[in-house]
Length: 408
Image 1 (cartoon, rainbow, N blue to C red):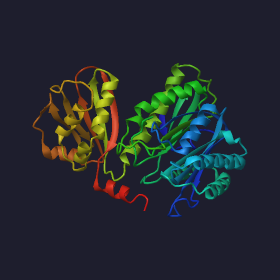
Image 2 (tube, one colour; image 1 turned 120 degrees about the vertical axis):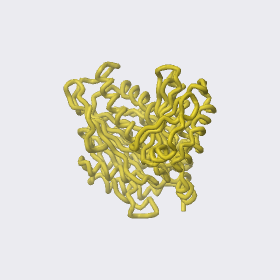
Image 3 (tube, helix red, strand yellow; image 1 turned 180 degrees about the horizontal axis):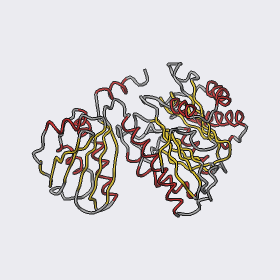
Image 4 (cartoon, rainbow, N blue to C red; image 1 turned 135 degrees about the horizontal axis):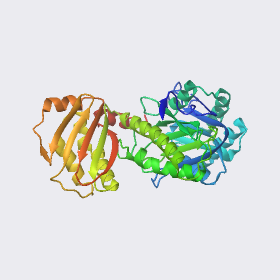
């Protein structure tokens, strides 16, 4: 498996574009994206577990479950189409209808996505006109994929895209993707949207199995602010153009594809965590030596979401007591007298705690390690062989500034 340059257009048969149609207040900012496969695709997806679901989430859940195939995804940014009643759902259908007509595909083969302000109705005339404008602009270059990745951004400071290649059954299979997410990030499947394209030949059953397993170790291990969005959506489209023998069971080919999908999703998840609103650092928490994976997951998530830990990271302060505290209230059982803790970054590695007692470490070295843009806290609870990794970011004053002024 190798990383290649690209995103949603990397896999064979996929094209994309993005442009500004005037949905956002700053009219020059791109706010609509379109991804299209020239042949029908199998589709799998995961969605927010928030009881309050956006219209586009409910619409896509139905398409994923019931449509015989999909071929396009159209996404807008600036307005979330959440808490918009029957009209919001109707607008999803009108968007899919316009897209189907522009691309000469069935309306049922179109997925929709939205992200932005909750409670506002979509400017449907701008949306349908935007689809007409985008259809002839679709392209298969890396740059075309980047246009789409940029168009789904809201408070993101960078676009997020990646692609990997892997050999399956003697054929080169490509998995590429893009995502957006910076605030309201605490997936339970953030405002998080992720769209993955692949040319692998795989049954819908196996694609669904891979996606649902994958998300547990990637997007579900990310938190910026503990707010689970109304719009969380992850969609994977597979068009089969790589020409490998169809994957219909959990064999070696399935594992290779799952590993490539994991690589894409892990990269995107980390990019999203590191681009948290107001963040200055990606904060990774690795828990090892656990008795079970569930135990490791619970502890890692508790530490990475602790506001006291996040503010310590923002201040480059090795306040390790906050980490043990967050472990202690996580609900997981462990021996609080047998915890080892290390801080790691590009500036080095330092053992901070051994058997829950300070090692007498250098505060200056700890500060240097914690001043880097990517920081890892490694926690060993010495109970077994299970481990888990969670990703988050520091918590700064800028997070408040961004969210206090989000609508205005």
